[in-house]
Length: 512
Ligand code: NAD
Image (cartoon, rainbow, N blue to C red; front, side, top):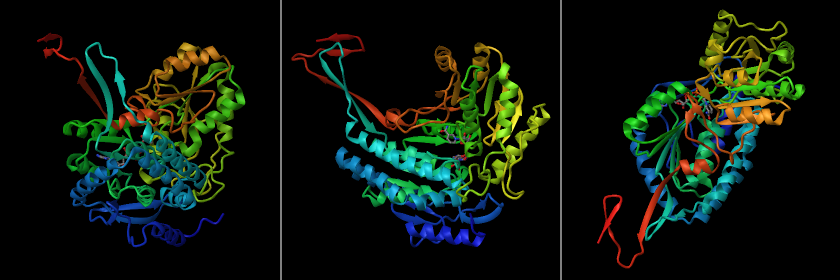
């Protein structure tokens, strides 16, 4: 496929952006239905296929903060004045809107986000599904009656928190935006979303589509800018009630500190170093294919990547050699090419990090099998070879997140040892086991400390199933009913029903 010249890409970008924002002359922030161009320092976006500057825009101005505070409160009042059924109908229509423009959204995500167009298409479809799923919950978020042992009627109601600030990364921009916006507004909240400065465009379009179905302007606002500038300022100065952060552990720590200083809660969805465990009795071909998908899909730029491959020693050499040989099969190339399975690393900083981690791993004694084929289409751009490293769990490459197409293969001898290695990690986001022995598979699933675990599979996630991490992978849960609870405040209401009620003196004693 001809993926176009630099100029053609730029023209196409403007054509697509102006389809949604006809008067936009630069990337900006979308607040209360208005477009705000920043006046801060330049933010440069690069074409990862050839490393050329693609576009640059200005960081958001702090002057937007009072506007954010104003529009969210007005919109939240309008939103909560509607019936839950009406809100659900509108949320469902967001799904239909996304489906109607899925081709344009897919192209934008690939063009600006440096994401293979096949991956982008799947992720856009998932976003439609997220709004459709949560729409159904809208009028079913009822409270509960607690059978207290007193004369009272005690009931619990779930209220919106207020305004939530969501901060998201660059690896799956519209997917992550939909993942957090859909439950937040279903639970009745207003949203300020700050996508990665590297990938703000599809989140901006999503906010526009949400407004177009009749959801009040200002309920979902998107701020395009840096995290350390406008992101931090919004935590401090916006009237927000919770921060939901999806990103790296180091930034997550700073977010948690800033939220704690303000006295508001945070959810952290952070990185991982997930163990993909293969026993000798596994269906060999399926496990091999599973191991490929687990790490090389999205060029390893996925939080749940199976980046530690634990293989039972009696099949270790064969399995690792076969995995390394498959690196030649992948279509690596331009993200806009329909045939591409593995695209480049999204940005230069990440590219440099992945290269450095491979170099350090080799310095620590990790080995690359001879048949690990370098399958890169050109020397230009931020391409990294799908790489298999043979090492041990103490190496830095097995302990730190690489977030690239690099897997560390580690042998084990027993079930106990596999579990121990899997758990010898500060992370706990995901994991998997491949084996035919059902009882063993369940024992391993039970003992590995991870928020998501697959048996004879990898990477399946769905909006209806809770998602989140243990340890340094974060805290709190997204997706499913858990996300709605995370975006709600719980209130317990006590109604006295006794004809001559006693007065409480302290928690226990009651007096006339
Ligand atoms: P990052 O932490 O560098 O940035 C994430 C977001 O935080 C961006 O919007 C950025 O602008 C903002 N930010 C940066 N510094 C900030 C600060 N001081 N204050 C406020 N905001 C700030 O992460 P990244 O490189 O964009 O993304 C990759 C990471 O995201 C990986 O670690 C990956 O595992 C993780 N991730 C986790 C999940 C999950 O669900 N657990 C999903 C996707 C990605």
